[in-house]
Length: 153
Image (tube, rainbow, N blue to C red; front, side, top):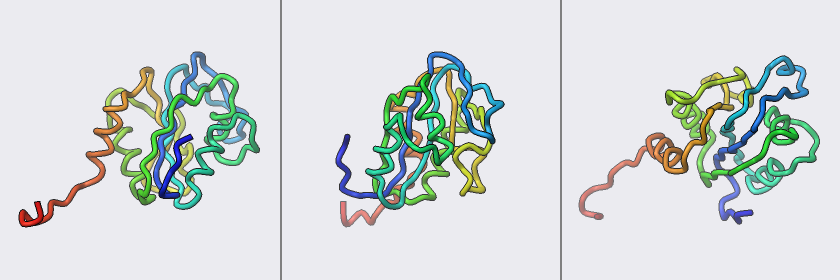
């Protein structure tokens, strides 16, 4: 696993399932998750490295909503995209940018965002894989670069 120098930040888990499935969570047990790609946007404002290692394990105590997906036998963790050092507010900004794209939808409202009032969900679904370049462009449009004076450049 990547060694991070900053132990806080935002991350995106890219999950894939070849077949539809259900999870054993009281809040979401009636939901049928279709086959496809799932993108979960999360944050860790401390212990980022440990959080990512935990997400990568199949066997773990189920605590967060995302644990029910990452531990499911049909679901494979394909990639973890990390934005080290980013504040929690970027988590919601990036989530809403991804949701606004036409090829993405929310399968489960309230999934992974119990501590957030500005997002419908932090789990986004797509039939197709999001390219790395597309994720980068969404992130870059979220983070605003403020130009410095021309004297510096």
